[in-house]
Image 1 (tube, one colour):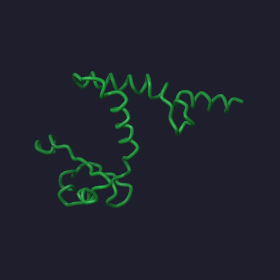
Image 2 (cartoon, helix red, strand yellow):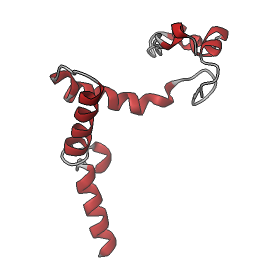
Image 3 (cartoon, one colour):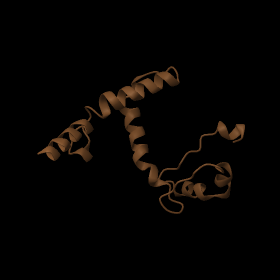
Image 4 (cartoon, helix red, strand yellow):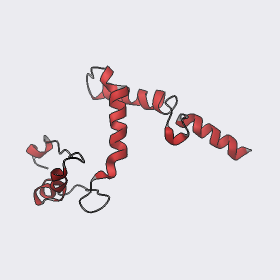
Length: 114
């Protein structure tokens, strides 16, 4: 990857900005991302990353925006603390019937044993 591209952040457009959708199937985009695995749910539709982008928004809003991140290791520590200490153990999830993933798993295994 060229030095110029390695400092470039390739951003995906929002759904409301339809013209940016075509950038992800353009010749220039394909040249810039040659050698990378490009993933789309269907031709020209980059929305398959919506769930992880939603998670990124949640972790930023609920946790990371509270801190001045000093370096990579500080960020890694904060993310681990959020995921293992709060997100999986205490935060309720609609997908888990509004239980935390840990509580949901505990109920699941109790039901399996019964």
